[in-house]
Length: 175
Image (cartoon, one colour):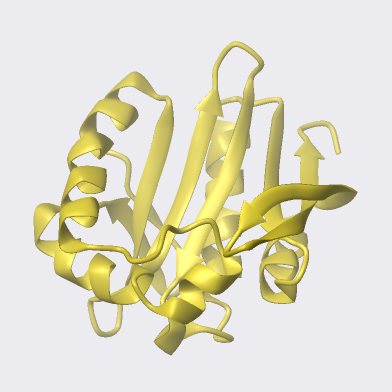
């Protein structure tokens, strides 16, 4: 599990068991669940099970779920994940940020780095991501990471009692 990336303010590194409680607190916030695909409620057991899978995913190169750790304070900010479809040489960018860290540019900073990692280190042909259409902050992250709007999937997701539109963004290596 030797994947560690660095940005100006963040260390992107594999999750460790000791982060499970912080994951539960940040991902378990109702505001985070309302605008992402994170399940709610998000229990400690769910966090521990999720973290326990990471070594297998990273070793098999099917996903790189990295903890965004604030260098200055060593706090968990959220996750930046790249899920890899090896057959089609593409990766899906997925992320969430804890509410105390919203609107500080951390997700954009981490997304740019993991897109670079996917295109250069993993030699992926395409990187894509999706967000609930009513989450403009996530759309900005994708745009700042170099992904372009590709379309909206109407009523693609049943989320919190209603169907939601999903905006899809992508980047092809040659672009």
